[in-house]
Image 1: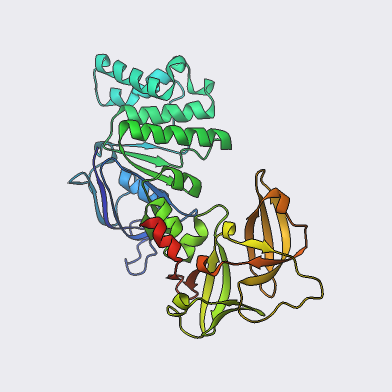
Image 2: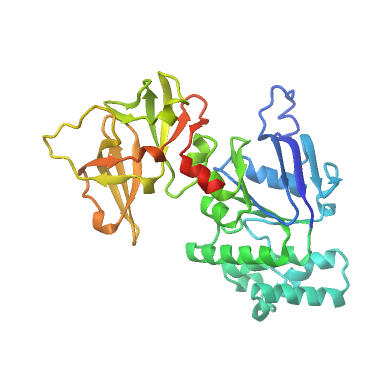
Length: 387
């Protein structure tokens, strides 16, 4: 096992994108720097096209480095071919050899490294036992389920005992239940073998449950690095806030008038500690998690809500999605184009098109600058969660 260190890595589609000068080319990933300590499990997460798979392929040696330095252990590997980097990669499509049995697939990497058969067999047997594949050793990949093929691909990589383990969305082809089961198996395998691991996914549930640290990427740049719960509790910017969470954080466009937040025809009070971080006239995004929004008693049809600052907003129910033990309700805030999500118990589920008054706990509001997207204020309870 070894550390993996990226220093100012920038990658272009081609060497300089069809002959363009570096100053004119648009990078796929830009100025990426982080270090994965020996034995840790890091997850690269972000929307499709953000550059996470490009980074993984760069570490594996499948793409030449345009700019920057890459170290595996203490060795600079910019010019080291993929086969000599001592890393193992599992792809989304598993890439098993169809003419080989499970036992032959598991031992193929060891065979290519000219490990004697007498040494290969115990290693293959140990991996098969760890992955529950002993009864499948004589089968071909075509005789396996998707989950079994995935475990064989993982086992083939693990059998090599690489310095680093690279996983490119390995669970995306599995159904929901099998994905949950395999995610648990991956966590247990990492605890057992302790191999330095980088895992790419767009699924933030996988990122939150698997990672020691997550690297949130967007548009080829790092948005935030941290422990999953710390990033969730204190997102650095609007992109991270909207991406992490299921359902994601609600975001409402507003303007701070020096005393309160104006949201169209409605207003929301501003706490003194929030006011000190803002300038009068500043456009912002107010963020709040769906589970922190609640429903007050519905207003009467003739009732006019007060325009004075308060922790209440009027809204109208849009769609209702029963999820079993809870219900996801999507509502539209009156006077705004913004839709927000809230989670209620089944017994509290409102009717479609029903008028509601939403209660917003002011102490749970996040505030993001509308121009830069950067966080201006986070709830003090977020600081306690990360301390």
